[in-house]
Image (tube, rainbow, N blue to C red; front, side, top):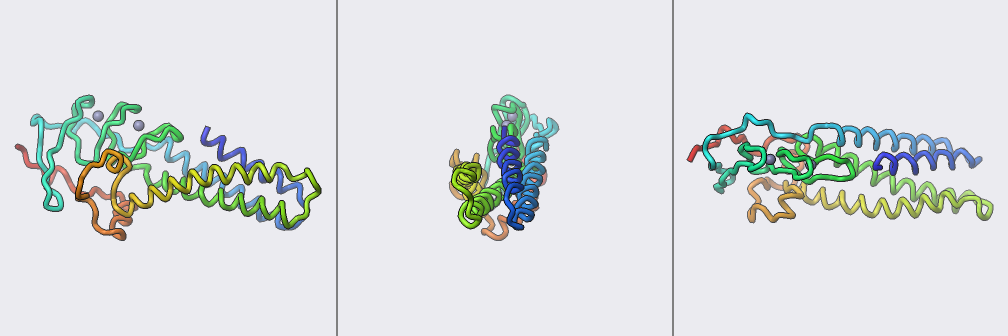
Length: 228
Ligand SMILES: [Zn+2]
Ligand SMILES: [Zn+2]
């Protein structure tokens, strides 16, 4: 479904561009094709990459363990379904039915969890789709207004503009929300559930972005784990 929503407008624009005689049709066709390829590439990795499924070796005979981070003490809990000890940012996805490392959310549009391993490609997918929507609005508006089309001939461009405005508004809003959370080093799950009143993973906006891009663990649980 998501690939369909990427592919159909992109290919439609290439077909519509091929009808016009203005030389700008060549760069328009190339840019549209590149956006389709990039979107498909990022979508493929987001869908098929393991989001960070927790393996079962992170277990403890103790029902609880305590970690300290940023001068705060937290009690680690076990997942009642997976029977594994969860670190602070690991949560169980009810749809996938397993625990995911640094779970952000389960995304039905990619039929996968967004976790430590595929969050970056998810952000790249949103960025690419947002830019594509803006490009489609500009390119199709240009074709409609500046190429002096005969009446009724350019209905396809009008449909693409409306589609891109609706899709672009949704995706850009989501991207903006995600970027705000990344700058605070918070996940969607933590934000929705209002976990951590004082966020122990907030190192400042710049370092938070670096931490997100490197996807390093915020703390090494086994090193700081103290059995109770
Ligand atoms: Zn679980
Ligand atoms: Zn899931």
